[in-house]
Length: 484
Image 1 (cartoon, rainbow, N blue to C red):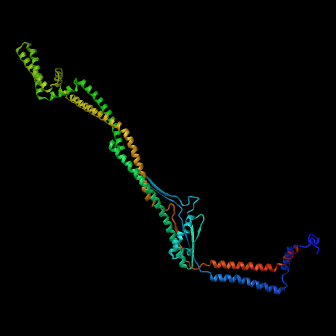
Image 2 (cartoon, rainbow, N blue to C red; image 1 turned 180 degrees about the horizontal axis):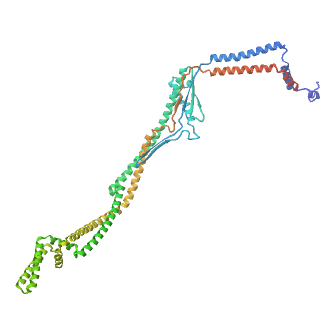
Image 3 (spheres, rainbow, N blue to C red; image 1 turned 135 degrees about the vertical axis):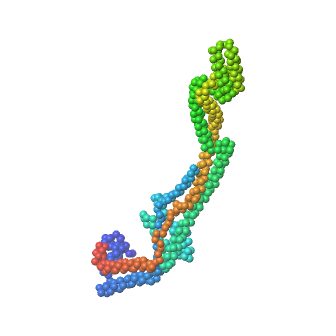
């Protein structure tokens, strides 16, 4: 039988492991290299470097040769950053206003980002592709760059020819503007539809308030608040007039009392005196009676009471007195005998005609003022009663007018907003302007060729560096082998 040995002998423990022996052999081969002589080795390295560089530049030249020619054009659009507002006032009705805040007033929303998404949307790309008779997949997306802290949006697109690049740029601009305009019109149409639906409700409310107001005006007799105010003012004005007339009446009464005391006549007697003074027959009889009385007094002083002449004169005076009394009764039938004597005495004083006329004038004025006061007090009572009855009606009318005014204001304002909203359609989608239009490219885009050449140069440099490191590797690898 074959005798087996334990693997844990001291000789086995001193031997290196299989992995370390393989690493040592690999490092030794890499350090010592092949058995080529230095000249042969140098030729081999030159041949290898030539092969690597040939591959790199061969691929680069092939890429440049087969790469399609592209023309690139770019344009810049700008969004104005200020908002606008409009307000319209309707006298005694209400106000309609619209305003558009700045597109950049919100820190969480940037209209440039929204516009970039719209510019890259299928709706814009498909519309632009159909304009230049291309399939949307072949059209591609333009490159869009947003410049921070500005309102600028930079666009860039490429095509196999200069005219095609310009056509794509113009097609994209037109499609972009059409989609934005379509969105604006859709928003405005939706807002207008909502307002018009609300207008139907506002119109019904307005007609109902107008019906209630007209019904109340026809049944109550109170048409407007101006009518109630005029009634109130007329009552106050009539009160002031009556107070003034009361003062005038007091003044007239005082003057009448003074003048009556001075003449010894009242106003009624003064009228009788004037009537007697203006009657020629009565005045003639009064003159004859005065002359007869004077003759009688003279005869009595000369011949005494029993003289026939005196008796005849006395009889003639009595006849004249009866004639005066008869004429006075004809002129003044309502005067008593006592008043007749007073009137007869006053009618004989011609120097009191002015005072008597003034007394009659004052009495006439007093009667006129009394009549005005009576009429004014009756009117005041009627107007006051009407005013008291109109207070509750005026309050109800005020409520109905307020409801009608509010309904009119709401309806008119909503109706005006439809037209006002069309004045500024840039509230949600700000105005977009072309700051730098796309030019016709003058030469093809050489960026790809430049990048290919730069890449080939970089690959060549790194390849040469790698070969140099392989050439000078022996000293470093020998040290590494010894450490292993």
